[in-house]
Image (tube, rainbow, N blue to C red; front, side, top):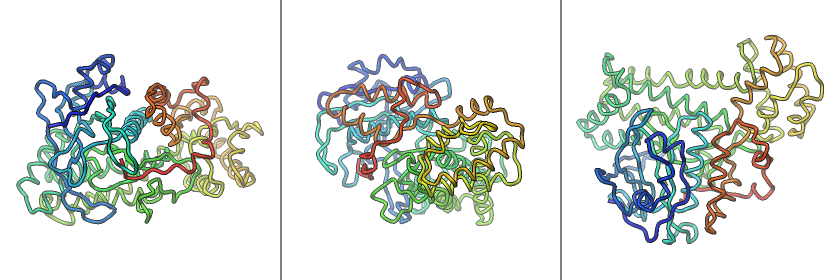
Length: 464
């Protein structure tokens, strides 16, 4: 059962998430809803539970983990199917270990904003319905106030949910879980000759596609442990995440990650590694190593196919030609050398006109080595001519896939600091901006600018 908090208050809510469970968002600020989504009152018909799972953390087997501060209330129907509602930060569970079962306002706002920002970017993700807070104090790296974020997903089953039963040599429970996932979320696989092999293959494909999406917008998860990997291929558990600013392929967004296991460059390989961990967990059901390996082999082709599709769209290319991969690699090479802002580069690149010299000045000015960009731009223009690209049509298409607004860490930090002082208006404003990431929104131009110098010193970690 959730543990009540003193004098809970409303922080923010997502009307788009509310629509997925047929809730009027205006109700979420009312006292009875605040009480329900803080854990102070359990809704009628709810049977709260916490789930057990295990996992590999930073590549090391950590054994039993489980929902240490997340409590599932139940699920609700909606236009896209049923969604589970889970309170994160609602108190201790049987799996809290040494934790207090609480979350803090800082991390709750970050998860709320990023969940909804990722959804607006078209990236598979869990959703966030509402954030509530309390003046109850909890100790993290410093003394902070508590909060609860209600997150939603069709299921919160993780890779580690399967690992738990395999490592405990519980084949009946393992099969029960796998059958539940197949019947509930992958029913088309039930008729396969080996449905458990096909389950592994489909989860592997979804994971590969999800990470291709991450790479294409410069998103870094920060803690890709197997207990943070969704069996549905959703971005799950927003902790020390970050969006790439000054491009560095080896950037580490989590300052707890001293070895760089979860750097931007490593996310692709770690996603594959995690699928192998899932394959090992499902092996008792799949039966043969070769069959499991065959399922896992879909990862890199699926990742490369999806990333290729996304990069063609980001550069406004409608056709595929020999040499496109070299064009992409060349761009990332000069981005790395000049540490160019990831989001601004792709957005401004849309303004380049094939036959108009100087039209590229906005993106060119992002580079230290402008001669390197000039050389790359010659090849890019030639490539555009090859498919008779139209400037206006291409610009519109590129601006539909290259966001102008992402959740930069400093924007989240500014909203958090105001919220910590009792002003929640910036959280709502930032949410509204991030819900329309591809729109120009000229009145919010400052939110799309290069980050201030002080932002380079912000650090995020696993502490939340």
